[in-house]
Amino acid sequence: MPSTNPTEISPAELARQREYASQVRELLACQGYEEQPLAFVHTYGCQGNEADSERIRGLLRGCGYGLTGDRERASLILYNTCAIREHAEDRVFGNVGRLKARRQADRRLRVALCGCMVQQGHVAEKLRQSFPFVDLVFGTHAIHRLPELLYRMYSTGRRVYEIPEEAGTIAEGLPIQRESAAKAWLPVMYGCDNYCSYCVVPLVRGRERSRKPEAVLSEARELIAAGYQEITLLGQNVNSYRALSEAGEDYDFPRLLRELDAMEGGFWLRFMTSHPKDCSPALLDVMAGGRHIARHLHLPVQSGNDEILRAMNRKYTAAQYIEVVDYARRAMPGLSITSDIIVGFPGESDAQFRDTLALVERVKYTSLFTFIFSPRQGTRAASLPDSVPRDEKVRRLRELTALQESIAAARCAEMPGKALRLLCEGKGKRLALAGRGEGNQIVEFDGPEDLIGQFVHVRITNVMNWLLDGELTEK
Ligand code: SAH
Ligand code: SF4
Ligand code: F3S
Image 1 (cartoon, rainbow, N blue to C red):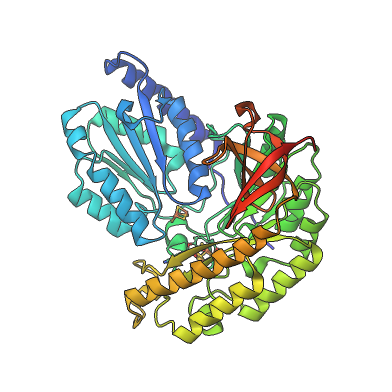
Image 2 (cartoon, rainbow, N blue to C red):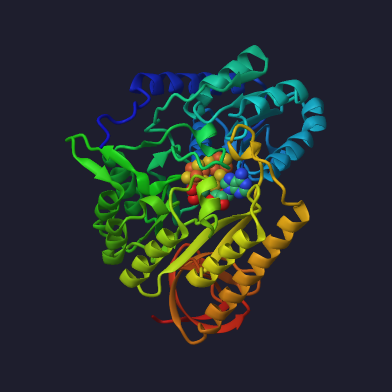
């Protein structure tokens, strides 16, 4: 049980930042912009980063910026970065590099980088040495200080680097500029203490810390009152949420979820990511008895082989994982389960990889996110000898993807004629609209655009492999 909650950024500090925001507004007004200056924010990585970007946008608006989706019109370009795999970092370096000429030609343009990638010392150093045209770099623990950092950047005309080591704090009460009017991210905990041997997240996001239950519950109440149809609770290990209420009551994730589920309204509740070690029967029982909780569980397994799981420091065996899945399916028949899998962990043998295929065959996931192991500086797995050639890793990835596609196709073949409730999320690729079902399945259907952001009922009419088409029904 947590004896104390993490420190929150003080109201005095937040007031200080609001003061900086008004000074930035004044500075921007003096810089001779004809119209309101615009900021372009692009987010890489996970939903946690998306949620951070919504706070960054809120802070930028407070500093006097308008927001644009058009990089070319922006006078501040900010990339919120991800460090999870090498490929993610390469894309950022590529995109930032492409801004060099424009930054040098346009004296009013500013380029900023934040997020997980820059929280790593070696990346900050590389930016310092090789990307002198980047004006502002700030780490994951400095987001609430963005107004102060912008003020320093504009008032000194010099580069600003602010990458504090983990402060272990939580910033409540930041302004939030949400991307969608129907789907909301609701972070409940930050950081990660699990130290999976391949993963950079604990190094860049710091120790696990949970928001006070009152803060989570009141944000949810506001979202429901504002008409949000889907609330996704976020945390790298959302189900290890643990905090004390102001009255000193101990909240774990099942309790938090139960109280959120008791709220009135027509919304869906989702949560991610669940670590199998914390996916307790108590949590699954709350899910099974829920009124709003979507019957979807994202439960990353990473591998189906016990030796690899041990080397990954995942803290469960394949059999224990299957036990959780079986319990969940008994409690919720038809439950949709999705997962993440890494192939080609250092030294993974073909036989060990086949255990992963066997597990995938057994669990029959709705969908899978599959990755080739990417060594991350500072993690234990990065220094392990790796005898598996790259070609072989690519082959394994293809074999795993083909297996999953055949599982998804078999599942979809049973769908024609079935009725589903969907949250209409936007335009479709093949038909006019696309929506997502409770189990996270995407269905396309024809209908008027004003259905976007609403719940609709469809019947599945057509299936092509794992793509689903439907038609609107009354109910
Ligand atoms: N906290 C979540 C996952 C966060 S990262 C969890 O524990 O499940 C999302 C996914 O990226 C992970 O589940 C893993 O499959 C993948 N991943 C993380 N580090 C990786 C690495 N070094 N190489 C390849 N894939 C990685
Ligand atoms: Fe990374 Fe493991 Fe933490 Fe997930 S649980 S963020 S994979 S260290
Ligand atoms: Fe990437 Fe950071 Fe999320 S490393 S996956 S953006 S926590």
